[in-house]
Length: 277
Image (spheres, rainbow, N blue to C red):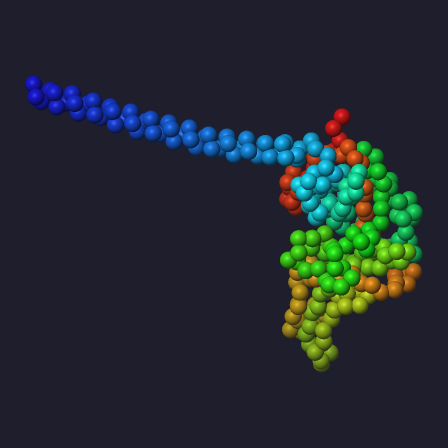
């Protein structure tokens, strides 16, 4: 009789322990899933209540959610440019401005004026659903100390300005340029030489052209700043002849009703923009 009672109690305790283990497993599963749901809900609440998806880009910029330098996908009228990145440049009371993260072409300084740029590029870059007009990149669009200090790769705005090539910027009624400032050195023709890109007016349009023409021919070449990734960028306030050639970047002024449709604003997940009817 005692043996049977012991067996019965053992079974009861066994079932109780199994019950406790199952209950703890269920609670743990519930808590884990509840935490996942809480995080997802938090992201949804952030994006909608703090204003991301479906909200006007100019409003989001004024609230500090969309920031200068954030990456944007701007759909042009040409599929050739629709995988290229644009950056948020600035805003005014009604509109947000984007600047292309690439040069669309190289032209003579005499051709770099608002009328010519608008006539030449509006067909390709002025998406009538999204943009009001095309503007020139201006000196006051650059980083705050552009006239005094090169911008370096530690600065958040660095990816806006170093695109691996030189380009025009308008200063009053004059054209100037912005360019990376790299150097390399090594033995060449029996002596030690150093070559600079953008130490003065660049003699080559791109860093790659300069490197191929100079650095690659140096023996024991030392590259003082790596190509594109860490070269400081300078605003070059030199007089430019009408025949001087440099790159053209496009600035577009978005319409007030343009909204964010998704994305996170970084290089791999740029903001997608559009118009909600």
